[in-house]
Length: 159
Image: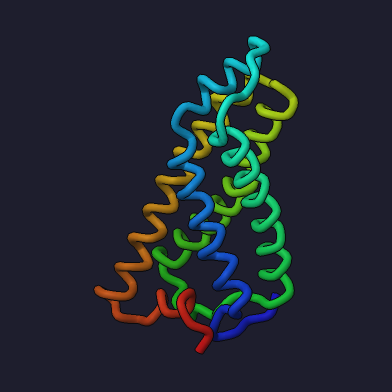
Protein backbone atom coordinates (compact mmCIF):
# COMPACT_ATOMS: atom_id res chain seq x y z
CA UNK A 1 0.00 0.00 0.00
CA UNK A 2 1.27 3.46 -0.93
CA UNK A 3 2.01 5.80 2.00
CA UNK A 4 1.36 9.54 1.59
CA UNK A 5 0.69 12.68 3.66
CA UNK A 6 -2.86 13.55 2.49
CA UNK A 7 -5.97 11.83 1.22
CA UNK A 8 -6.85 12.49 -2.41
CA UNK A 9 -9.83 14.60 -3.43
CA UNK A 10 -11.62 11.44 -4.56
CA UNK A 11 -11.02 9.76 -1.20
CA UNK A 12 -12.24 12.83 0.68
CA UNK A 13 -15.33 13.11 -1.51
CA UNK A 14 -16.13 9.41 -1.06
CA UNK A 15 -15.67 9.67 2.72
CA UNK A 16 -18.12 12.55 3.12
CA UNK A 17 -20.58 11.27 0.51
CA UNK A 18 -20.74 7.84 2.16
CA UNK A 19 -21.02 9.42 5.61
CA UNK A 20 -23.89 11.64 4.48
CA UNK A 21 -25.72 8.76 2.82
CA UNK A 22 -25.35 6.59 5.93
CA UNK A 23 -26.75 9.32 8.17
CA UNK A 24 -29.60 9.99 5.72
CA UNK A 25 -30.44 6.30 5.60
CA UNK A 26 -30.36 6.04 9.37
CA UNK A 27 -32.93 8.84 9.52
CA UNK A 28 -34.98 7.17 6.78
CA UNK A 29 -34.95 3.83 8.56
CA UNK A 30 -37.89 4.83 10.76
CA UNK A 31 -40.78 2.58 9.82
CA UNK A 32 -38.76 0.15 7.70
CA UNK A 33 -39.45 -2.87 9.96
CA UNK A 34 -43.18 -2.35 9.53
CA UNK A 35 -42.83 -1.82 5.79
CA UNK A 36 -40.73 -5.00 5.50
CA UNK A 37 -43.21 -7.00 7.59
CA UNK A 38 -45.94 -5.77 5.25
CA UNK A 39 -44.04 -7.02 2.20
CA UNK A 40 -43.66 -10.44 3.85
CA UNK A 41 -47.45 -10.47 4.33
CA UNK A 42 -47.91 -9.61 0.64
CA UNK A 43 -48.86 -5.97 1.10
CA UNK A 44 -47.61 -3.55 -1.56
CA UNK A 45 -44.97 -1.00 -0.64
CA UNK A 46 -46.59 2.41 -0.41
CA UNK A 47 -44.67 5.67 -0.48
CA UNK A 48 -41.12 6.65 -1.25
CA UNK A 49 -39.31 5.87 2.01
CA UNK A 50 -38.64 2.16 1.46
CA UNK A 51 -37.37 2.41 -2.13
CA UNK A 52 -35.16 5.39 -1.29
CA UNK A 53 -33.81 3.62 1.83
CA UNK A 54 -33.02 0.48 -0.17
CA UNK A 55 -31.32 2.30 -3.04
CA UNK A 56 -29.29 4.54 -0.73
CA UNK A 57 -28.12 1.35 0.98
CA UNK A 58 -27.07 -0.12 -2.36
CA UNK A 59 -25.29 3.14 -3.25
CA UNK A 60 -23.42 2.99 0.07
CA UNK A 61 -22.34 -0.59 -0.65
CA UNK A 62 -21.10 0.30 -4.13
CA UNK A 63 -19.33 3.48 -3.00
CA UNK A 64 -17.63 1.68 -0.10
CA UNK A 65 -16.28 -0.91 -2.52
CA UNK A 66 -15.00 1.91 -4.76
CA UNK A 67 -13.48 3.55 -1.69
CA UNK A 68 -11.64 0.36 -0.77
CA UNK A 69 -10.25 0.09 -4.29
CA UNK A 70 -9.14 3.75 -4.13
CA UNK A 71 -7.58 3.10 -0.72
CA UNK A 72 -5.58 0.17 -2.10
CA UNK A 73 -4.49 2.12 -5.20
CA UNK A 74 -3.81 5.52 -3.63
CA UNK A 75 -2.84 4.53 -0.11
CA UNK A 76 -3.53 6.37 3.11
CA UNK A 77 -1.75 9.23 4.85
CA UNK A 78 1.15 8.25 7.02
CA UNK A 79 0.62 8.38 10.78
CA UNK A 80 3.99 8.26 12.55
CA UNK A 81 2.28 7.53 15.89
CA UNK A 82 2.35 3.86 16.94
CA UNK A 83 0.65 4.34 20.31
CA UNK A 84 -2.25 2.30 21.64
CA UNK A 85 -4.60 5.11 20.53
CA UNK A 86 -3.31 4.79 16.97
CA UNK A 87 -3.76 1.00 17.01
CA UNK A 88 -7.31 1.34 18.34
CA UNK A 89 -8.03 3.82 15.55
CA UNK A 90 -6.79 1.31 12.99
CA UNK A 91 -9.04 -1.42 14.38
CA UNK A 92 -12.02 0.96 14.41
CA UNK A 93 -11.39 1.80 10.74
CA UNK A 94 -11.34 -1.87 9.73
CA UNK A 95 -14.50 -2.60 11.72
CA UNK A 96 -16.22 0.44 10.18
CA UNK A 97 -15.32 -0.79 6.69
CA UNK A 98 -16.63 -4.27 7.55
CA UNK A 99 -19.87 -2.79 8.87
CA UNK A 100 -20.24 -0.46 5.86
CA UNK A 101 -20.27 -3.61 3.75
CA UNK A 102 -22.23 -5.85 6.12
CA UNK A 103 -25.07 -3.42 6.86
CA UNK A 104 -26.22 -2.89 3.26
CA UNK A 105 -25.48 -6.53 2.38
CA UNK A 106 -27.70 -7.72 5.23
CA UNK A 107 -30.32 -5.17 4.22
CA UNK A 108 -30.23 -6.39 0.62
CA UNK A 109 -30.57 -10.02 1.68
CA UNK A 110 -33.49 -9.05 3.90
CA UNK A 111 -35.26 -6.86 1.35
CA UNK A 112 -34.61 -8.50 -2.01
CA UNK A 113 -34.78 -12.13 -0.87
CA UNK A 114 -37.29 -11.64 1.94
CA UNK A 115 -35.06 -13.27 4.55
CA UNK A 116 -36.62 -12.25 7.84
CA UNK A 117 -33.76 -13.77 9.86
CA UNK A 118 -31.30 -11.12 8.63
CA UNK A 119 -33.55 -8.14 9.42
CA UNK A 120 -32.57 -7.95 13.09
CA UNK A 121 -28.87 -8.41 12.25
CA UNK A 122 -29.16 -5.54 9.76
CA UNK A 123 -30.51 -3.30 12.55
CA UNK A 124 -27.94 -4.46 15.13
CA UNK A 125 -25.06 -3.93 12.69
CA UNK A 126 -26.39 -0.50 11.73
CA UNK A 127 -26.61 0.58 15.37
CA UNK A 128 -23.09 -0.71 16.01
CA UNK A 129 -21.84 1.17 12.94
CA UNK A 130 -23.49 4.40 14.07
CA UNK A 131 -21.92 4.09 17.54
CA UNK A 132 -18.49 3.42 16.05
CA UNK A 133 -18.90 6.29 13.58
CA UNK A 134 -19.82 8.59 16.46
CA UNK A 135 -16.67 7.49 18.30
CA UNK A 136 -14.67 7.96 15.11
CA UNK A 137 -15.98 11.52 14.73
CA UNK A 138 -15.32 12.27 18.40
CA UNK A 139 -11.74 11.01 18.04
CA UNK A 140 -11.21 13.20 14.95
CA UNK A 141 -12.49 16.24 16.85
CA UNK A 142 -10.27 15.32 19.82
CA UNK A 143 -7.25 15.15 17.52
CA UNK A 144 -8.11 18.50 15.94
CA UNK A 145 -8.94 20.56 19.03
CA UNK A 146 -7.18 18.85 21.94
CA UNK A 147 -4.09 17.25 20.43
CA UNK A 148 -3.94 19.88 17.65
CA UNK A 149 -2.14 17.45 15.37
CA UNK A 150 -4.02 18.30 12.16
CA UNK A 151 -5.32 14.75 11.75
CA UNK A 152 -8.84 15.92 10.85
CA UNK A 153 -7.52 18.21 8.11
CA UNK A 154 -6.33 15.16 6.17
CA UNK A 155 -9.99 14.34 5.47
CA UNK A 156 -11.01 17.92 4.73
CA UNK A 157 -8.38 19.18 2.30
CA UNK A 158 -5.83 17.53 0.02
CA UNK A 159 -2.86 19.70 1.09
